[in-house]
Image 1: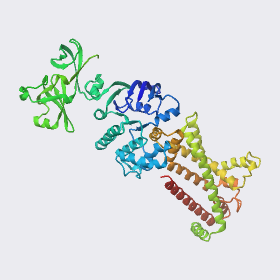
Image 2: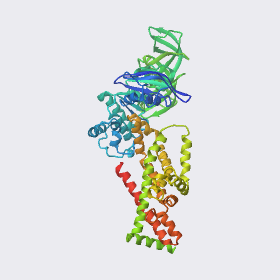
Image 3: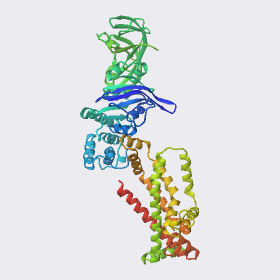
Image 4: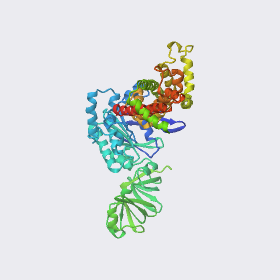
Length: 361
Length: 231
C-alpha cells in the first residue's frame, strides 16, 4: 500500500529521520512504537504528505508522491490523519466533520448523511449541533476520527491517539480503531509510546529509535525476540543478563551468569557471549518451603526481595539472586504468599521463556 | 459642567425632533466611515492573508512598518491624499477633492495600516495545528486560507471595528479633504470642531454623544452579523 524508500528528514542541521525503509501492507494495523522524540510524528507527517522528505521517496499505491503538488493533493485526499492534539475549528461538530467533504466538493445533499454516519461510527450521534470547542479531550479525539473517516480514506493515520486521554476514553478509541480496521478494512498506521497499546492493536509493529526503524515484526517478534538491548528495555523487558554459553545440547543450552547457571533454548554455540532477556511476567515466585514441589520451570534461583513497586493490580518485585531478577506478579498472589521486602523466595523461569541473543557489546 | 448637562438634553432634543441638519450630518458621517471601512476591509483581509501565508525577504520589516503606521497623524494622511487628488495631483481628474468620495478614500488610507496589522495578527493567532488539520483534510491552498480567515473572524472583526472607530472619530482627513462644507461634506467631527470654535459647546457635546451612539449601533450590528451568518 505504502512503500517508504530510503527516506531521511532534516530540520536545519538536525537529522530527525535517518534512512527509513518501510512497507505498509493493505488492510493491516501497523504500529510505530518508540520513545518520545524518536521521529514517529515526523514519519507520520511525511506519510500524510504534510511535509516532504529531505531525500528518498514515498510511494503510495504505486504513485510516487515526490511528483507535483496536484498529485500530492489527490494522494493526500485518500488518507485521513488524526493528530495527537486534536484541533477542532470554532464551529459546530457537524461542520467540523464535514470539512473533508466540503474540500472535495461533495454534494450538499450527501454531506449531511455522511456526517451523520461518521458520527454514528464514533458513537457521538447526537453531537452534530454541539460547539466543537466545548467538547472533552476524548470526545474531540472521536470527532477528529469521524472527520478523518467521513471521506472513507484508504489509509487512516493516528499520531498517539490516546496520549492525552483518561483510561476510559483510551479504551473507547482503541476499540474504535479495531472496528474501523475490521469492518471498513481501512489500513491503519498509528504511533504510540505505549507498548501495551501496540500489543493490543497491532498486526505488525515497527520500533523506531533515534530516527531509525530498528525492528519490524509481529507483536510476538518484538516482545519476545527483541533485536537489541535498547528495544528490549523499551518493550518492557526489565531483566537483561549477560553470560557465556557453557554447553548446548541440541538447542538446550546452559548459560553461566556470574555464579549461577541458567537453562535456555538457543542454537548459539558454547563459548559465545550472550545476553538473556527475561520478561517480568515470565518470572514466578515461590516460598522456599514449597520448593520441594516439582515444577517444569528449569531455572530455580533462591534470593531475597529487595524492592516492591505496586502497578495497579500488579506488583513489580525485584529479587536479588546474585543477579537481579524482576518479576511481575498479581497483588493477590503477593498477599497469599505474604511477600515483603527482605523475604526469601525462589524465583522460577522456564527455559523456553528466556530469549537469548549473541552479545555484541 | 453645565455645558455637559445641557449637551445631553440638546442631544436628546435634536434626536427626538429629527433635526434635518443633524440627520444629514450624521448620515454622511456614517456613510463615509462605513464605506471607508468596507473599502479598507476588502483590501486588507486578502492582503493580510497574502502577507501572512507567504514567506519573503523583509516580511518582518514590512510588518514593523505597518505597525508604525498605526500612529500616523490624520492630518498627515489628509495632506498626502490632498496632494494626490487635488487638481494637479495624479488622481486629480476624478475631482475627488471636497467630495464625500474623497473623504472615503482618505479615511480608508488612514485605517488600512491598523486593519492590515490586525488581520495579520489575527491570522497568526490560529495555531499550526489548525493549519495542518485543514491540509490533511485535503484542503487546497486557497481552501485552507479561506477557512483560516473564517476561523480568525472574531479577531478580524475586532480589527474592523477598531478601523471604523478610527475613521468615524477622525477630524484631519474630513477637514482637509472634505472641507466641512455645510450640506455637502460636513460630518459629525468637523461639525463638533466648528461648534467648539464658535463657542457652541453644548451643541458640540450633543454631536459627540450622537457620534458615540451611532458607533455603538454599528458595533452591535457588526457583532450580530458575525454571530448570525458565521456559526
